[in-house]
Length: 474
Ligand SMILES: *[C@@H]1O[C@H](CO)[C@@H](O)[C@H](O)[C@H]1NC(C)=O
Ligand SMILES: *[C@@H]1O[C@H](CO)[C@@H](O)[C@H](O)[C@H]1NC(C)=O
Ligand SMILES: *[C@@H]1O[C@H](CO)[C@@H](O)[C@H](O)[C@H]1NC(C)=O
Ligand SMILES: *[C@@H]1O[C@H](CO)[C@@H](O)[C@H](O)[C@H]1NC(C)=O
Ligand SMILES: *[C@@H]1O[C@H](CO)[C@@H](O)[C@H](O)[C@H]1NC(C)=O
Ligand SMILES: *[C@@H]1O[C@H](CO)[C@@H](O)[C@H](O)[C@H]1NC(C)=O
Ligand SMILES: *[C@@H]1O[C@H](CO)[C@@H](O)[C@H](O)[C@H]1NC(C)=O
Ligand SMILES: *[C@@H]1O[C@H](CO)[C@@H](O)[C@H](O)[C@H]1NC(C)=O
Ligand SMILES: *[C@@H]1O[C@H](CO)[C@@H](O)[C@H](O)[C@H]1NC(C)=O
Ligand SMILES: *[C@@H]1O[C@H](CO)[C@@H](O)[C@H](O)[C@H]1NC(C)=O
Ligand SMILES: *[C@@H]1O[C@H](CO)[C@@H](O)[C@H](O)[C@H]1NC(C)=O
Image (cartoon, helix red, strand yellow):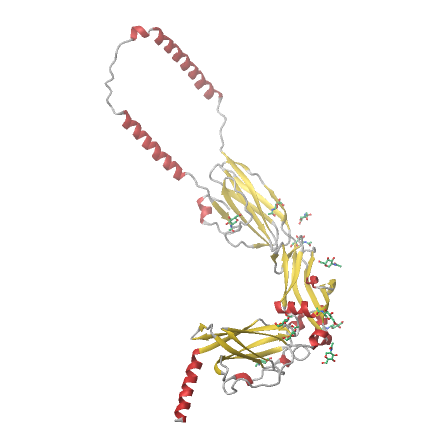
């Protein structure tokens, strides 16, 4: 009987286990001392559960931390690990989920996850120009905004637990600016030496408030709370001693400070660096060439500019006037050129006005310049005889008409004979037909009219189909 009960219990137990699962997320890595937040969620057959469960947390640190709470659906554990008691490294956290019961804990499932504690502040050095993030290339004509964006928990820790800051900015390992408060996490500087590379560095040292950090946690030393045969909790991942963080070796002198012993004992330290290359923007865009052309003549513009190489160049053509929006791009990725000196030959088939858009760009700037081009029809000067003959003829005709009209009025009465109009041909039809023809002609003209077109000469590239269509010559 007892055996049957045991077997029943076993199957019931495992079936319950099979249905439930849990996940753990954390907001690490964080610096030693900062709060790390773990969150566990319970699922039954992959469906999030909103019921009330008991959560039992623990980690695998040398001095173990534990936490227990009864919550609906999910549990959050916020904990800090003082640098005095713990080493940085990868650790593991576990959570056991139990049916909420006062009599005994009926376990539903376990979950475990690894987390990372660092011995330096976690964050990113962000570089911006005109409020836009920039990469390696910096515009030499614009301010560079340099901001250390610390990871949330690290910033909170730094601002709440320290009282003395020393933030230093370095350029090529030379100190350039320093600050005694957290406003120093942001620094504006203008790098004006075009074509030169620099390493921007920032070091942050904060002295911890000793009075605060002493009174804090009292971690328990008991280890067992989850059935040891069921869970991998006993595996100790004490990788801390192996964990030297890799950035250290790549830093130059400015980061020396973070390696110091003082950093471990009484301070929170961090350093960040970025390598940049300063480039002069595209400037003094100069365009020479005739933009008022006889029909049949070639447009030939020469475009030069100043700035840092490499340059990219392309041309776009529009019928009529085109308003530059500023976000125009080349249709095809153009090639790179070492010098800003381009020629733009183009043949326009129609005599019209056009807008030629010249797009010059380099790594830090794009200049879009519009040039209006007018193609006029060649009208030959008419010769004197051609003018005189029709003129005299017209004058003669007018005189004749005047005489005719005068003659008519003079002899009106004698000519007043009633004449019947026997013309029954349908004038309307005739007119209608003419109108239809005219309409057809108008439609024909409208569709044959060259529509607004936009084409692009990929500089020094094979002519595109549109180029062929409009008879461009390159
Ligand atoms: C560390 O945790 C303890 C206990 O939760 C808390 O009293 C203390 O303020 C925390 N320290 C920091 C720096 O957050
Ligand atoms: C860390 O979390 C504890 C408990 O929520 C809180 O009292 C403390 O202020 C937090 N510390 C920091 C630095 O956010
Ligand atoms: C340091 O940077 C701050 C903020 O950008 C600025 O106000 C200050 O003048 C700078 N100091 C030096 C010495 O450059
Ligand atoms: C640091 O500790 C001093 C006392 O030693 C206290 O007056 C100060 O408020 C503390 N600062 C912070 C940010 O906790
Ligand atoms: C902090 O604790 C250490 C021993 O762990 C003690 O020597 C030191 O005096 C304490 N500091 C404060 C400010 O309480
Ligand atoms: C400990 O670190 C080593 C390398 O430093 C790594 O190969 C190993 O997987 C780590 N062990 C654990 C349990 O994380
Ligand atoms: C640290 O700085 C000292 C001089 O202050 C220098 O001699 C040493 O090479 C530096 N170490 C590293 C790892 O940069
Ligand atoms: C392009 O260059 C010309 C001539 O240097 C200048 O007038 C124009 O403002 C520039 N346009 C842009 C968008 O930089
Ligand atoms: C532009 O470049 C040319 C030659 O590269 C140089 O002669 C000229 O002084 C430069 N102009 C400016 C304003 O930098
Ligand atoms: C930077 O290099 C470009 C060529 O790539 C040159 O035209 C320009 O004058 C250089 N600028 C400086 C400040 O040396
Ligand atoms: C360029 O900007 C205009 C508005 O100025 C916008 O209507 C258009 O969609 C933009 N084109 C591209 C390719 O972003």
